[in-house]
Image (cartoon, rainbow, N blue to C red; front, side):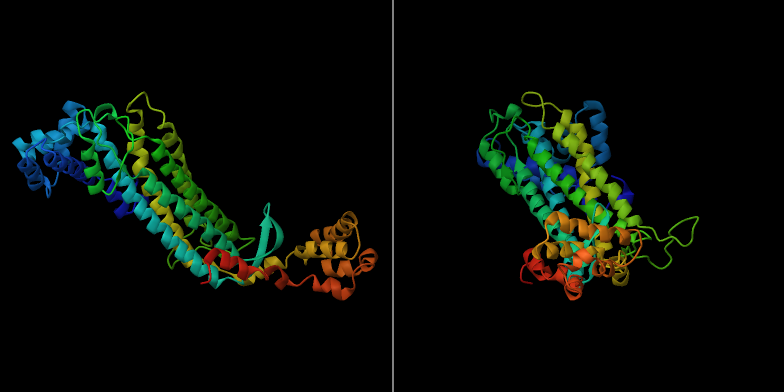
Length: 435
């Protein structure tokens, strides 16, 4: 985790003190279940809670023990015994390290998902507000980066809103899929511990019992979780790149808010650069980079190995922390985005009406011209305009072949901008409902 791109709430989920607190809760809840089953004394379970529930675990001490034992869970249990006393002998009975590690990781991922869902909600709210603000603000639609036909800026934002609505649903599903608990012991057979212990711990930790674990929780669950984060990152980069293109000097239809005192360049005082969306683009690449090791972690040897462990210790915190930061940055960009309708209209008009070429093409076919001939007539009048030689409507009205099918008034009618926007309300209702 890099402090520059880290928000405190998400970072706290991955701090050692939080991790050890979760480990303790897993162990203590398991002790409660064991006590109810008569496997350990009830007083021992109560003592474990009483002695360590409010304890601050000594991270340096645990690290010191681990340097000798070369085992993180044993180091923690040794330190826990120093706090609890003799009753600590009843901790971890019938359990294996993965029971603690995997259940803890899933608790952390669930908590991280809750924050990320809230982040998406903030972004969705910003997109909806700005979409309705610019619902009927006309702008040019582009395909291949080239002027195509008119759209509205509100539609661009509505598209992003719909995409992030899907991403929210994906993340909710990924959260549910990863929210499982395994307290099944060595190789997952429950030979040394009753399955009811797992059920008790799962309920206490807000999880579901893993139907079948092989000493580790199956990593296909985690692969789907991090793949979902990768998809969200890609959606975020798509929106970031759109804004970056719109901020280019030659376009300048929208730009990031530029605060008082902000500097764009160390060399050129005039610069206003899209630094936030460029940053989001880079961070999105990093989130996607963590998807591959998550997928590769699915492939473990037999009932378990720990080839997944080192990778998860890195990408678990980094992917969630990075996406959390980037989502909040993107929400801020949308909330403060500077929009320039006059420039949008200027760009719309830049090609002298060529954006209406399809309407003319269709009109000619409806009046009896073949599609091939209609296309040739429209294109031969469009190409000079593309080169800056004349006005499209004027050239069409001067084309004898076109005039065989369309009057001047019929040609002029095909240049109505409102025609392209007549279904904006329908699209908005599909995206936002009746609000």
